[in-house]
Length: 398
Length: 158
Image 1 (cartoon, rainbow over the protein chains, first blue to last red):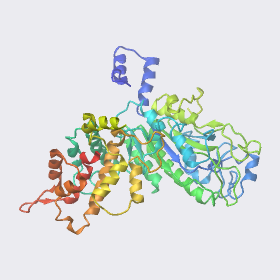
Image 2 (cartoon, rainbow over the protein chains, first blue to last red):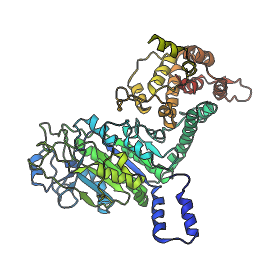
Image 3 (cartoon, each protein chain N blue to C red):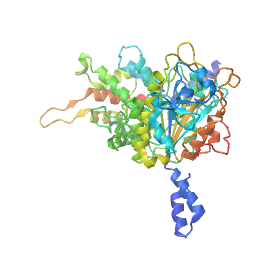
């Protein structure tokens, strides 16, 4: 939004002239969009979508999966949780079920990046760059943020150890491991030392960076002290989502928050209702549920995506695990998503239906739901963000 | 070629642009380690620091290579990380026996090979003086001074 045309002023002016109804409400809705936040959780390592949201009613599922198989919904311990009569939610994700039932959580299945290799590095890079390895190495969120008018030190944050590729090229993004660690004084000395050090710097960029750094650290301390009382799991993801919720609830102006959860590369000893993968799901589910509870009605203004780079083989391997595959599942929560649905053009698991005879086939290009979320919550045209990919005008999520 | 080189090396623009360019994270980390002559080999923690500063080793994604533009490398987030790294190195340096007797100004001029501006010197001097309680002589906090030297605007330039 240019400074010449400010929506707030415009609204005020229009209402002063007694103007109302459709135009005004459209503008009001657009204004509301400037307070929306996109939260992206990258599930790194290729999550087994066939376990997260298992197609227990697909006749092939029982044959392909033995050691990792999950029981159809029912009374037995460790059974899947009923979603829609075909798919069941992994029992370790049970804390997400209330959000699904409240229609605040949607699942997209058989989703993935067509024509991308089964290499983690390449697939993660392509996803984070918006569907291309070519171009100027601009992250997909960096490209989107170029069109986001919100300013402020917290407009784009990455709660993780290093700046993700999805934000590369975005100079305003702040990367930090926790609000608590976003500090300049390290327990001794004054926090504004750095600012006074740069006050006379000849470089405008450096001077402004120091001012923003001081502002960010001062505000981080204040924001960190706000607490809603909702108990988060002590896991890394739990703590990061807690910080993101604090940023949102305190009105910091955060429009984009990126974080990650690893450990999905389950080549061996994957487990079924319990085990290595179940532990990951529990971490994801508990953290997301606390986040949703914490935000309450504010979740309508926050779009949370949890997605992975690719899925895993339909069949198990010889070490009770699964190998690199194609399609997987993704979660979208909040932001008025039409939830309570597993959105899938299900390709089936029959041998002829599998991609290259081994993987769940991709029937939904992951750029479609991602583009819808970017457009919805950042109010940005997704085409340039996803390297010219033209999302279907018939949205699937909202 | 020799004529081209001659033209470059004798041009005012060439010499006028000396010490104007922002260090990349790699250059910053390497020069800071060298300035504090920590002697320890580049390790995993340093590599993570580079990741955090946005320049993961051998993982440059664009085929055009890492940016040569200062704006890419100097922003609020990276400045906080650079300052935290500077504090970490200053703490390490302080384990040396002679650290207490050290004069940070002469350390800076000896080990950095750059000149700090008057305003930077004055600013560090002021920040590093621990407020003296009544009657006690003023003490200089060398840890803080070293950290601020490494975080100074001058040290961020090549």
